[in-house]
Length: 152
Image (cartoon, rainbow, N blue to C red; front, side, top):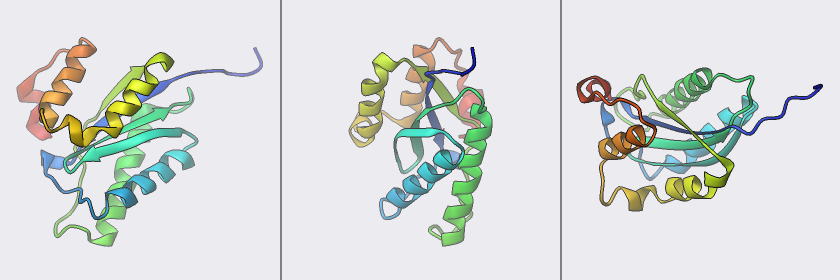
């Protein structure tokens, strides 16, 4: 086959280091646009982005020649530098070391997009930790509280 065809959708979740609520409503749209540019410049398609002051959700269409780890590393390092260069917070801004990456099917895209767009509503009833544990359980990933949440 001469061409490569794929349909890979990845829901990425990562938090501010220490789960601090540092992402301000005053500049969150600007950082989301910047992250969209990073994803686009890496040849990937950003489908949805939103979050809360302490974490972010990104839904991307991933090409098979790109490593998820490399893409998330680039998003986090470049966006941290962008935030720090603008001095939007009084300390050094950092993202957590790890991240979650969850695949979804084309038939679930609308649900995932809707979920990402409704972050503020979702977090009226559950914390980021509760949300993340639900993701892990949904995908049958073993959860070790003391390990996973020791850094984030």
